[in-house]
Length: 432
Image (spheres, rainbow, N blue to C red):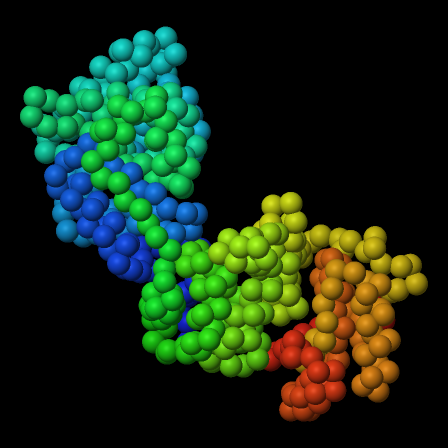
């Protein structure tokens, strides 16, 4: 089904994946200014810079784009050595050792017996050597708001490393707004004085959101996918211009559009995506976005069920994420199924018209009775792979007949979220 999804929209890859990819870097006014500022930092050899932004505004991607551009325009990595620290909740000593390790300095295994002054001397000799080779040394620390005060002070001491004429080291901190508050601490007054560049990444405005969506789609396909103006307004309202949340909304919206065989994303698909992500606005302050554990809509559940075939799908409510594992050799967990129900794997394949999917078997049974009375049709109760979901569906051998039934049932139930598979599958039936 994933292949069908990509083929329907003419996609080479997912345009709204969350993994930072420099190819998908969108130059809003603020992001362009950030890139220029980093280029200035690199050329001028200023010592200390900070990038601040809300989660998901593109801090990490901005730096990756900068490094990517650097590699295209210079002899990088021949000219540049970079230490990239991702988990900075470290003591001063731990951070120092992490930097040395990332720069691949040869520190003896018994480094616990080496004094800090000795390590500092080794590091300074390394920096002087690189300077003599015409190389720059960058230390980039992500999620820097997690750095303890004493560790930030250690960075200030490192930034003091210089010759009579120039800095030996450039340091870049990436962090959430809490980092700015931390840097205002009186204990870090000297560090703050050394910051020569302070960059703030702002959320996208409505026009930038529209351009951002079109840009990412253009990177993944040669076929345009239209999006309604009203849909963009709704995205702006619920995402507050945060690119990561825009990606999540658009990813779900494209799935919803695919289910309805629509190549244009309307406000209805955006509403379905927002609902599936459980994005809400606080009543007292519509400007504050509240994100809770994802609640997966019917469309999303069915897409995952069909797309991953013989893989088991877990929705981990504690971790708020989907985990997928091979299920071909695992015994199905039927503990929640009453004993009178017998699981029966039907070898014959059908087009499946899904009416409902739920983790609650009692809800599925109640709806089955209700739907059968309303439609005067035989409804099948299906077990979805691992027994964690139950679906109500009709089975068809003929696709055209199934399509007609789909339209009839949609009008009869006044229910838009009905999904018909485009291929035949062998269902696991619990009740006829």
